[in-house]
Amino acid sequence: MASVTYKHVYKRFGDFTALNDMSIEIEDKEFLVLVGPSGCGKTTALRCLAGLEEITEGEVLIGDRVVNDVPPKDRDIAMVFQSYALYPHMTVYDNMAFGLKLRKTPKDEIKRRVEEAAGILGIEALLKRKPRELSGGQRQRVAVGRAIVREPKVFLFDEPLSNLDAKLRVQTRAEISKLHNRLQTTFIYVTHDQTEAMTMASRIAVMNKGVLQQLDTPQRLYDLPANLFVAGFIGSPAMNFFSGKIRKDGSSLFMETDQFSIKIPEKSMPIYSPLVGKDVIFGIRPEDIHNPLFVPLDISAAEVKAKVDFTELMGNEIFLYLKSGKNDFAARVDPRSRYAMGDEVNLIFNMDNFHIFDPSLDPENPPAIR
Image (cartoon, rainbow, N blue to C red; front, side, top):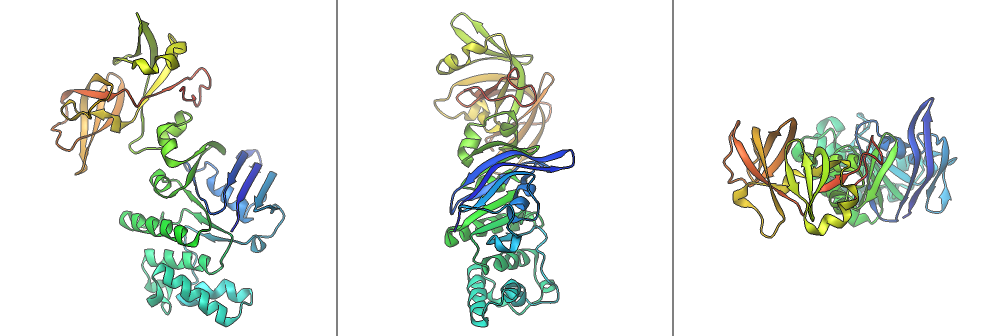
């Protein structure tokens, strides 16, 4: 078992910087997820750790050992790819055993490791089959099994669930989480799916354009996003954003936009008083917007008028897509709500859970003010 450390890592392809001063310390036995949109640098970070890409600057350590110049086969890692990468002419057993045979591992030890991994993954009955006889989920389990038999210090997963259907993705991510619990080994997992990241990770590293945006636990990322990018990326549907100003009226503060003016709770006034008169961005999550008939008790409620653009009935909730002036925004409301396209409605914003971002500090990616 081992920790993993990125120390001021840069990776450049010509004039393009894929990783820009990346520094992360991943603890032994941690489940870290690298998440971000396509092209953000998360797979490059994984490949630099695996030795499949050469680092331009900085250091990567596995445990206390700098591995920049260590060949991939000697880094004591195992990688699971998106494409499964199984040998079609080999049985499941031979696919799982292949790497061990190359290392001239004794046959009895190979048999023990393969059967133990197959038992962990529930694929004992598949060991004599060829990959063409397996479903997508079974192939992915074989690919994971091939990694397990290596008994590495670190497991690397590069978007392993993206080829599976929605139901199987949910099932397989639960299996991978249980596997981590059982093996107690360091897992580093790359995905563009923030739901996967939120449900599996001990901590999440959110990346964009090669830059680490925030590294934290799933709940803290959701509750306390560092900037506008993280706030918009974590959560589904995404956080709603409104441009406006903070206005002072007597002893009260108001969030003023082209569409509405809502009072900022008294407990938040000391934080936002210095922003009076400045252009800011107001953010609120869809789950903090309620039908007035089904408002949770004891919240700081503010009423906003809007027009229903369309609805999505999800069974346990309803997604409302709304217009307020020039702004489009979304709400997740109680399934007992009765709304139709075109309805003019009043909605309740929970002002205990809102966010303010200051573009004057960074116009491209305003930081959160709290």
